[in-house]
Length: 190
Image 1: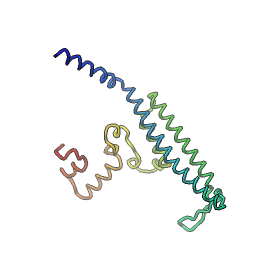
Image 2: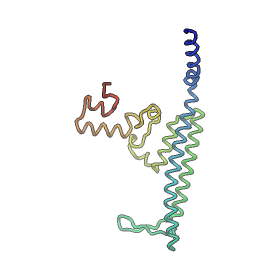
Image 3: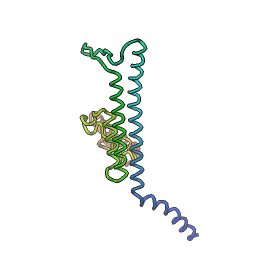
């Protein structure tokens, strides 16, 4: 009985040791996952925008209006001319640039030259149109290591936990109630 248990333990431990001992396999998988997610988000976001403007251009052409000289009323009462085909081309160029940057980040990550966080930062930069560089760091930062570690909001410094903390502070909620709100697993004590 002891011999069978020992063999079973060794049999089960070998694949586990291989997985745990191969940190580069985990890193490459994390690189692939981060790059795949950002690639998907870029394609969806830019694809939706390009599709929107293509539909507008098609509708304008169907009504006999040149989409390259589309007058757009602005909130201040002025009128600006929008060149929709040029706008579509710029969006396609930005999309291609973003996909290239994500692929380059993936290659650097897989080679061990850059962390997978860089891939996510690149994706966030392009998805926010560069606004992530102007916003406070917590507003646009996505900490991939926290997400992969099971914290979907990205850790304590991310926007959601900070906003939750400010609301709880403003309401004067503390103690055990606060612990349960911040971590529902603490309902039976942490």
